Image 1 (cartoon, rainbow, N blue to C red):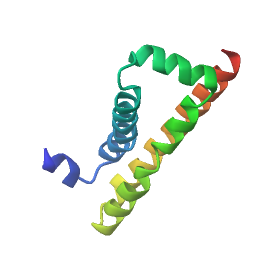
Image 2 (cartoon, helix red, strand yellow; image 1 turned 180 degrees about the vertical axis):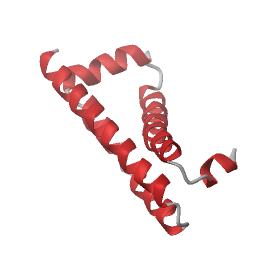
Image 3 (cartoon, rainbow, N blue to C red; image 1 turned 45 degrees about the vertical axis):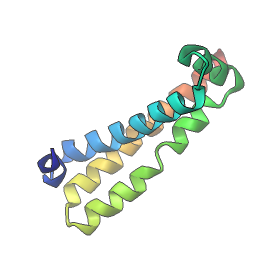
Image 4 (cartoon, helix red, strand yellow; image 1 turned 90 degrees about the vertical axis):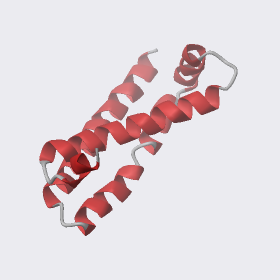
Length: 102
């Protein structure tokens, strides 16, 4: 498992840059929903317009991942983290516009 993070490849960085925010988002949703149903909690977040805000906050740990990849001279993986962050930015923008329609 650790060998995956040691490789210097663009796809490794993209995978880490997309999966890390999604894992943080899922754990945040599970912790915040507590006794409520997760789906009803997500619908409430969409109705209040806070789902895109939470998603955008979950992308911040990519800064730390980017710094770690640069510190350990994994420049290609760091570039992948930037691309993963761009993908997540597009997802956040789509969720934001879908919230406005809903």
